[in-house]
Every structure is written in C-alpha cells, then in structure tokens.
Image (cartoon, rainbow, N blue to C red):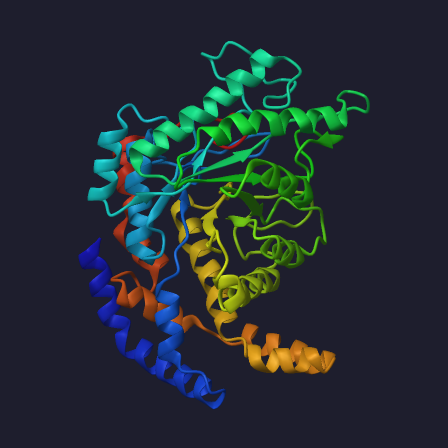
Length: 430
C-alpha cells in the first residue's frame, strides 16, 4: 500500500502544490499564516472504533459486505489500512466482550507492529452474553437486584484490566438502563443505584486513567433513560471525582439540540472528556460524521479550539484534553471508505475552526454587533481548507486521494478471497 500511495501522490503533487499556494495567498490577505495552521493540524487525531470496521445494520436487518473482519486481529489490519490512507487515526477503541482478546500482550505487540495504539475501552452491559449468569433486561448498574449490579460492575473492572494490559488510558460507559413505561422504575432511586455502582468502578480506576460517562435521551428505554442528558452525566461525573468526565456523542441528542452549547457548558464545568463523532437527522444516531450537519460540527470544533486557546483553561487541573473517536454504523457504505471520509470531515471542521479570527470575534461580541460576529464564523467555515488537509496527509506519508488509492489497491477484493462473506443477517450493529 505504501508504494501505491507514493506513486499516486507523485502524480497529483504538482496540482496539490499549486492549490496549497493559492490558499496560502488567500489566507495571507486575512493575516493567517498557512504553515502555522498546517503545523497545528498535523497534531490532530481521532480514534477508530473496532466495531465500525464491519458492516452495521438497523434493528430490522443487516446487509453484510464481502471481506468483513472475522476477528479482532483482522479488524486491526483494516484499522491500520485506514491509518495508512489518512494518517490521523493511530488508535483503535475496543468494545468488550465483542473484542475480548485471547492474549492482550500479543494483541498489543501486533498493534504496535501495525503502527497502532489503543484508545478508550468500552463496556457492554446493554446486551446479555451467552456465559453471563444474570440478565440485563431490566437494567445493569441501576438494577434493583444487587447481584445484577455486581455483575455489571465486575464487567467494567474487567474492561479496565484488559485496557491496562494493552495500553489504554480510559473507560467509556454507556448505559441502556431505563424504562419503557410510566411507573416501571423509581426515577430517583435508579440514578442513585447507577452512581453507587459507578463508585465501585471508579475505585478500580488506575491513577492515570479517566472514566467517561455517555448520555442518550432514549432507546432502548423509550420512556425514561437513567442517563438521559448532559446534566445527568455531569451529576455522575461530579459525584465520582476528578478522573470522571462526560462524553458527548453527537447523535445522542434530541432534534435541534444546541450541541455546541452543551460542549461550552461542560468545558465551563471542566468535565468535558471527549466525543463520539457521527451525525443525526431525526431521532437516530451513528450516521457518517459531517454528512448531515457540517456547520454544527464546525461550531462544536470552534468551541473546542476556543477553549484550547484560552489561557485560563490551559491552567486548569485536570488539564483540558478531550479524546476524539468515531462511532458510526456503516449500513450501506464500505466501512473502510466511510471511516476514511468521516475522519477527513472531522479534521476539516477542526482546521476551519483554527481559521476563526478570535480577536475580531471577541471585538464584535463585546460590541453586540451580531452581523459582523456571525460573519467572522462564516468566513472561516466557508474557506475551502482541502489543500491543508491534503498537505497534512502528504507530510504523514498518507494519500492525497485516500478513497481513490484504496479502490486502486483492490483491498476489499483481496480480503474477500481470504475472509469470505460473513452470512450474518441479524439486526443491530456488530
């Protein structure tokens, strides 16, 4: 793949250089040094979800794609290919027990040889597994039965131990706990039990680790989800301690929610831990990042860059250091292509946010000049930063045109010959 990338890049290099120079001139008129932006953009990275390397599905059905990875090692090879193509996805996030490694030491060694590391561990107490003693049908960490809660706690502690062995530094917990009917749960007691259970998990957290709590307004609990919004997530993090913070999934909000304001509030509380990037149209989530609401993604990035550049926030302890990961369900697209394109769209929003003239924005905000303040944001958002994206990939040895190179490589056809087609037509993600 490296030779193919270099060969394709050489054919496109002259055109790329000219486009980069044109953008440099355009930005110079705005008193922006393109090299400074490019250098900053080189430091960006986003993690790949292990479960996103296979074909997704809906609750009604799933349509397999040829050559899907059959095991964790094959997922790592696909993740390494994504990293080769884009250069900004050096970490993989595992979901247990879907990706429980037989030998964590060997897994870490293979990942290192492939140029990969590991991001947050993800626990799963929203599904019953064949070998578990108690069911999560009526909840896990919120369950009325102490034995069920203990089982869920032990599972999260297992995720931490696996993570320690492979070099992860954080644990993400999303709970499906909730109710579908009025009266099914005591609303206050359910949250109290979740917090009490998470205190046991938090006690097992290594000193250098972080714990992320993730919220979602509904599904599968369509009446009352225990951790239904950022406020509840914040309550939990504050109850646990300084190593706990909130994870924002861009698809886990009700329609028209001002997500950038949620981000700003969590930054103000010093409890913004990270993101699961995707997109949403109605009440769904897990659409491809930037496919529906690219301006919203830019506004979220704007709040993040603003916080990173704020000297008062840089002094805080614990440090403001959000983790970025994609969390998508690739129902129709080739998962590798979708992860490639989504990572680029996330990076695009990040670079556009770097272009915001914050001094001018503050001036117009302080003067209550609504029109000019908005124009500052629009000017950055409407700038085509593709040449900077391409330059970053070029400097990292990745592809100027990643999808085109991927298709030229015929990788999907090659792995199909080795892996075959996974004939799993059930509903849900894998």
